[in-house]
Image (tube, rainbow, N blue to C red; front, side):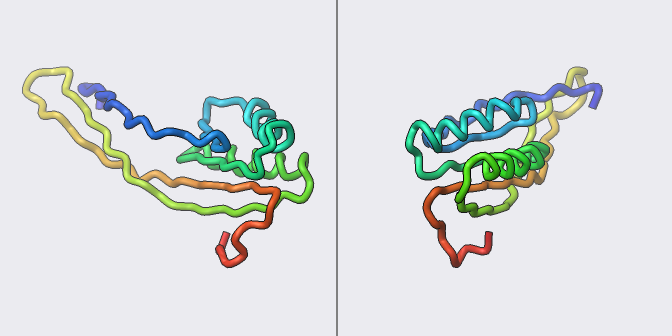
Length: 123
């Protein structure tokens, strides 16, 4: 892939709910935990939703467990899934064709709530 460069596609602007936190591998755990506890304790949210993809899943699970330790009587519902992400690659040299690669990426959604969540859910 030395002879190719990735083409950035414009991302669709999907609005994020106020109680939704999307975690990345670059974000600091302390900041995520502080923001989540602020939402639950001071802002009066009854639930928060932690979402992550790929390598950020480990961090998300750790953050959810730390939040549950800090705030007692939280209910948790976890759902996992996956999505396909298509990357476009443009050649740097003449004579090469543009490439398109597809990655299968895992996703996790952890809902932490003060109220009891759906008991019939598997998560």
